[in-house]
Length: 228
Image (cartoon, rainbow, N blue to C red; front, top):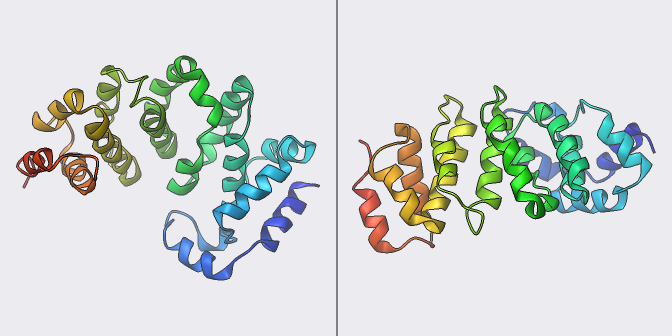
């Protein structure tokens, strides 16, 4: 099965209605590059291909043309079981990510068992000149390091990212809003002392107020911290 055949498989799973809907959610991608395969179908195809020579050929054949190919690529990486192979494959793939959806879907399960090693890669990702590499790095801190593996220095790492890119700033705000719920004592000073860029600051407050995991008392305080 060549990449061309895999692409044909993707077209066989096409949902035109979903394609039209989803294209509106990823404006950075040319609609002509969107096949329109729903995520459950992509995951099912990834499970079928996982570990096969065909999957290996597909993963090595970058860049892909279709958005759905990139998303399938992310599904395959997320299911890999060998950490060393996975982190290497992720590093290769990151520069080719061109949208938030593919970026946020990429979350290898094997990373959770290798947090100390994974963390060594994150500062480099945050300093990248690639929008979605930065977003991915922040997403890893959000996904894996806000519970038992949390360290206050991680907040400083994310607060140190300054960007004009919407998809980076949204992820920073999402990170800090989640951190306010999970690590409030360490996180609240970043908002109270206005350590975040103004747009990120206000978006963090908005996201936190929308959260069910934050107390009404804290939400009231956060409202008072909005920058007008």
